Amino acid sequence: MTTKVPIAFVKNNLKEKAFVKNAEQIISEIVVDDHFADGLFRIEEQKFLDVIFGFDRSDDYQLVTRIFNGETRGVFASRSPHRPNGMGITTVYLRERKGNVLIVSGLDALDGTPVYDLKPTDFSFYRNLEAVDDSTLSRPRFNIEKHISRSESRALLQQAGQLHGHYCPGLALGVLAAMHGMEQFRHLSDGMEDLLAIVETNNCFSDGVQYVTGCTFGNNALIFKDYGKNAVAICDREGKGFRIRARNDMRAVVDQLFPEFNRLFEKVVVKRDHRPEFKQKFRDISQKASFGLLDIPFDDLFEVKETKATIPDYAPIEQSLVCEKCGEMFMASRGHKQNDVVICNSCLDIRHPFLDGYGIHCS
Ligand SMILES: [Zn+2]
Ligand SMILES: [Zn+2]
Image (cartoon, rainbow, N blue to C red):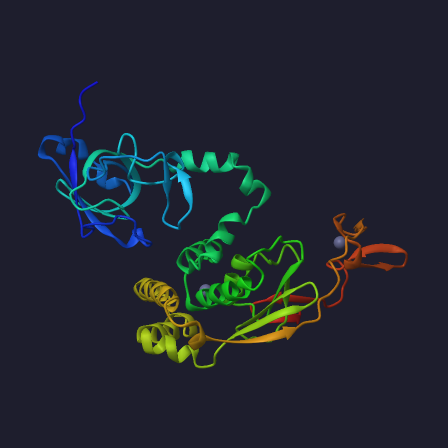
């Protein structure tokens, strides 16, 4: 074992205190010593790095320490810089490599801090460990609840984008409206119809609502009223709750901040000009506009009113029947008897309502 020498030093604006609330917004340089520069070969292919560094300005340690929110904890249950071996480890985002300088986001280390090692972060470890963590097994929405309680709208929008497939102002509005509604219910939603979301549109807005509230098409905690309004009521089983509606002038707000958005929306979505260069531009501005909306004061975007909604009883558990025409199993209420023969709705020659981009209607 060789003695430990720093392989690099940190350069940033943090002069005194490295604990910062939005550490991801700090940009630092990790300047690697020429002697070790060959070890950076192909590092730019990595997105995330574990940075192991030394707390060179803390020469003492306390086994029991006070953390940032005033609570007392053991040093090994904290990220305190006052540690027996004075070592810190942080996962950072690698923005760029310029020769032997790495430009990273999210490093909570002071200017001049010695760095002892760099490794690509292996998220498969995290995912596997997460899978054995019982707290997310018993509470699948644990992480979403955490984000809502900390008002982390960026993280929620980013995750809602995984469901929705793209970022757009409608999705962002749905996320914001749902976050506001969920705050009244201590962020808890069990997907068992005890918390309900009544959405009034089948557009992007409602996907933001589904993601954040956990009231979805599949768990019957989502009620759809085909009014074509960017609005949602979030209620308990008694129907008590709040209706949150996007203001009429919300479009003007978007237009003022991102004038390109409406112009490209018109071109790509309304006139269906799908030339790749326009689609790409639209995607970019749409993403910028949706994240930009998160910084606008809530009251400029929404109107909130207390509401008392009528909530149906819990969804019935139905018997399953087998259609004598197609042989497929279906819910008993979704079929009829015709001359003593059980037939499913899809085999019956009558019009049934269905939901698509045009709303609820009959074929
Ligand atoms: Zn959308
Ligand atoms: Zn059938």
